[in-house]
Image (cartoon, rainbow, N blue to C red):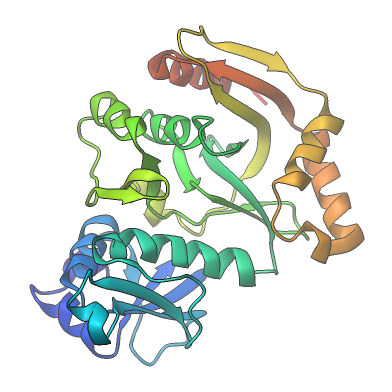
Length: 304
């Protein structure tokens, strides 16, 4: 059963009681909340996700609610918790739905150590995947959202999961986080894209999450192979400019962007070396998103 199939009011009832159990790729997350803003964001952004039963096992049991006490009335705040742990300071109540997304990222990056986890977006076409690691402000999520709206399958916007045994990329198709000007860029680029609520005045500025395409969610068990490692950078007025990158440099950059590489020891090293050795690596400057998407679409047409 998908979340969109719940009867009106049922989502809020479950969130207030036994919780809603979402299957997202290899992860099962239970969410509880008294907040209607959270229910609305989930209804929009997770409509195509599969639901589990209340009694099913979950990897992460989470809750996000308003802070009690004086804060309930004076500058209300929201608090995210995971099995009683509160990893973040409370945030303004209108930030609750965005805080939930950040909290779920924290759960996966801090606990799913069966995978090598890299801070990078990853998209796939024809069985071959592009991994896009880059620092904040580089245009990584914008390029990811652009490709997803031009025929690529979303595996993840934030967390690249690598099976250290097979070297395969594991899908985790959740909403794509966009900030500030990128929100308007994608809304113009893909008018049919669905967005959750705007969250203003966060430490990152204005944030909005784009709903993952239904096809990406439905294929959330279908793994992919790495074909390209691309380090994107938005540069105003720049033409599409791919520059070859030495595989050794790409390998070290992936390590620098990994959350838990040190936990995988020799197997982690050998897995990444094997993946990067078979990939094309590049730095990629762009300003025009349509031209960037066309470049990668042409690249995907070239036989492996």
